[in-house]
Image (cartoon, rainbow, N blue to C red; front, top):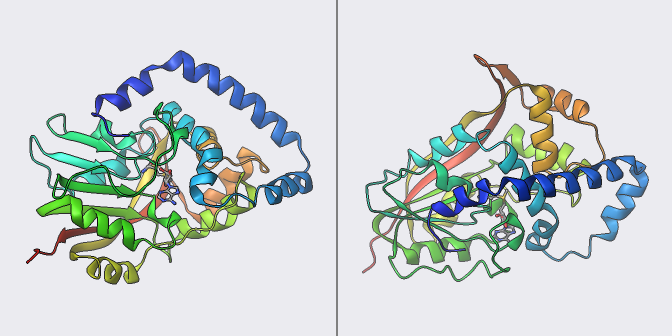
Length: 291
Ligand SMILES: C[S@@+](CC[C@H](N)C(=O)[O-])C[C@H]1O[C@@H](n2cnc3c(N)ncnc32)[C@H](O)[C@@H]1O
């Protein structure tokens, strides 16, 4: 997907289509919840032929996109935290990979141009599946590149980092935001989510070793911090609904998920919202000058 930031708004505006898909998904979810857990596990095992995470997102992309459409502001703090590290100026081109359904675009300043690239068609872009690499951007063609919650699906992240070093201009920035290997978030994803979702979840998370992987692929590290923030909801029922859709949880009840989130991640009562604690490791890098 390579298009302007208007794409995300257009997608979010197709609400009647969303509502219809939502009802279908609801029906599907009820059926799935009715399945006994062993049967669900058997079904999951029978899906283990799926070769890659691209395949997994053929299953998980639509519910993930639905969660983001129904709760478009839940991850606002996350996107804002990431964007503010990009030091964006008017007129700049911002690459976003893997972009999912283009959720970042609506938080970018109106004066920049968003270029999203998503390998999996199931995020509602209307495009066909495409390869992650090579990136569809020219040498030095973007001012900043942003990658959110995608590289934990890649065993070898260096081909992507190398491609980004090719496409981000000298002096530009790469903001890598993903789950830290030692965080409560990785424990939640590889624990509760892995046990109860449609595809299983085993992330290959980032950590200090990622800084070396970046240096080896043409990047200089500007900053690296574990950044805590909240996903925000009206109440814990909405929080659980979002998580069930986003992670495609099928063999547990929303109230169980709420309890696990409270115990494993933590929930804070904010002014008029409930804040689910989340955290990403955010690395800011600049391309090493090419000689
Ligand atoms: C958790 S979503 C993140 C999407 C979006 N950046 C966001 O923040 O919502 C994970 C993303 O990883 C992508 N993905 C899955 N397998 C991948 C792979 N092998 N290589 C690169 N991206 C992959 C998915 O297509 C999806 O866009």
